[in-house]
Length: 415
Image 1 (spheres, rainbow, N blue to C red):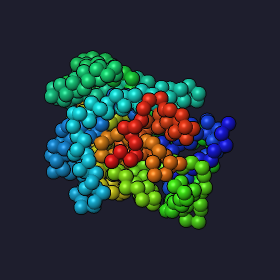
Image 2 (tube, helix red, strand yellow):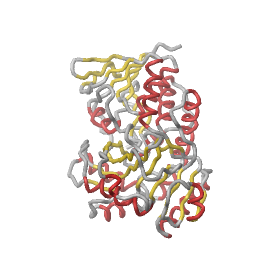
Image 3 (cartoon, helix red, strand yellow):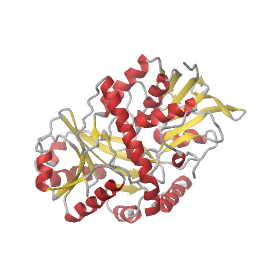
Image 4 (cartoon, one colour):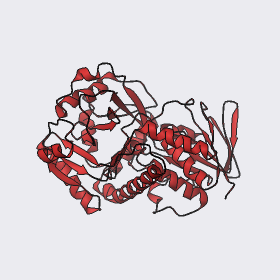
């Protein structure tokens, strides 16, 4: 067993999974998180989906024109808050440069491999102690023939890279999930996708890392990083200082300000998303799904049903925009006609900040300038889905082992 001391900054799903796999290697692990003990973070209120179906990066052809159209609609699923902040301008320019077919083709096998390996690890973790993983696939629900045609093209692209997908008409869609009434023309079923309740998964992983001996410090905001001889020697917040041999920055949307403490300008923006969870929905589907045209994700979690959506780029701001929330609520009855806006009347919306890289590919790797500092962030909507594989790769990097596949395309210094 290695006695290496590892300090992980960040207590979300990526930080927890990194701690778990580092502890399994025999390392001594200290986790430092901004949230108070038992506090919320972006890993808690998300849609809880594990998505091998999501092999197209956010930076893809058509996203710029869609984004410009959506900017005019206060209820749209995507919005970039106009700003002359140099970091946002740089991020936007890099996003524009990468929204190409060439970038999609270069990235899709990487995203496929990451999601499939993470799915395998989720199943492995579930077999050791259940956290309620549901392995029934995902439905991309389409209201329009145009939407179904576009999703059928996505299914064809999935087949090209070995991801299972099946195009279904309305009747076959209803037969696959008879527990909910749907008004759709059809769907695409991705049978390898899974879902879970993220708060239950997080609680299980927290229990595991504590049982393995992790030391966790909550409510600490790191504001100082000490370096010596080209290496990080400690991180500090308030009156607390944490020394270690290796450091992992898994700070989600706060990763960029953390790296600025050591002079690194990482292109990263916070993408705010919202979710609403119905405790007693009028109907309960068995599968998770996505309203394709409305860009809303739906996940059954026990007897509850969660609806999540929007990508609002611009600053570390967790305030709730009622128009964006209404955009989610308004879409539900058009796909699920037994639901109404009244069902959401007393539901408190949740907001979380996803860390978004400008090319839609996560940041995962060591920093050349500080070789004992590993960055694990930038997963956008796939943070939960890629949590286990990211944690596993972090542990490989700490050990000096080759990860399960090449990861150079995720290098934090690639821009």
